[in-house]
Image (cartoon, rainbow, N blue to C red; front, side):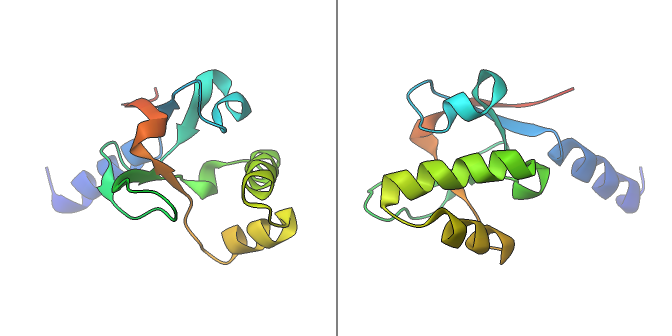
Length: 111
């Protein structure tokens, strides 16, 4: 298989990566069966404000609908006492949204 085709196949698969959230996650109810699109299947090293956790996933914001983005921003606004519009602006400016590994049951590739 040539390298270009292998990269294309990987990118196509990545577009179907989802993290199955634990029911206790504040984002669980926003997604069918708690399945949120992510960039990788394995957790990556990252830091979280106010937490000792060191592994997590980046949400694939490009795969979320405007309504899903609004809903996530509202949950975050309520949790962090922040304005929803500011959070949406952060998303639009390219800020990544991390999800803690402890909020994920498993990851999978959706058909």
